[in-house]
Image (cartoon, rainbow, N blue to C red):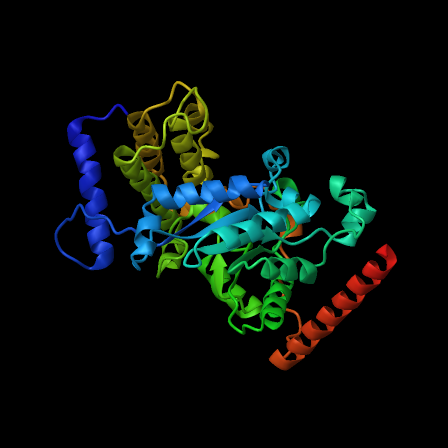
Length: 405
């Protein structure tokens, strides 16, 4: 990694000091707390999915611990039904599997639930189903071959619950709302998922997590109020701002200098962790090996400022840059350059504005207005609407069954 033994020890000391500070304790300890974790897998074959899940439980020591009644490191296995990337289509997983082969999806989940110990949860991360408008426009590919057409939100949630899924995370976008076509997350649709899951399952606390549209801490609070979800998840914005859920985090972006130092600090801390816990060799390609993982994260932390310093952006992307020491030099150089820029000057630059963030890199005007508040229904009114949807769905299913006889 290009670092001396002393530099490595300094990284270790900084990490342990930060952990001690977060716990409000004095002194440094090499003991790291292992918290319960949900591990996500991608699969379309039920037997392969079960084998992978069992290996994860065994290799993590979870099998031995839950057998003894203790809390295991891995508490649940999640099936990826949300990835919209082209690699997911090629591998038959993610949102493509759920949209185009729903029965395969439910076979995987049913088998996971039947084969895994009951102490281990089975969860699913999904997107909203395509609309009939998507089908009419010919955008659905293989899904257009399904006799019943695209699933409704209610049909999708019902099938997941029938499979025995213990928790569902709903990304409030379809697979078409991705990258340059990304739009604001549809929290009203997520609320429909929440209401339906709790009515259909009979569990008023059935856990549904809302995902999408979480850029700032205020978005977390707003999302809870709009969706009534059990939890809120962030993905892309956390890659740029891993402190999003930390108490008092919003204070760090009240000044341009504070925002700058926050992002540089994330890069410094991340490189400390990489020094002690390097990514697996070759995990992002043979050339560059594990440094490609580091490179990708640094691009996100530093995106605002690399856009204003294209020479350093090009250098970070150069395969000849492949050590932690070289990466630290980039962070140090950026800190030096911006030390000469005062608060007023920094506020005039794009890096200070929201649209300068990595999170907003694909987001245009189409991403701004979908989550304007709509007239709120009372809890009883929402229950009635959900019950009517369930009744309508059951009637339509009965009609399809009669036609197929």
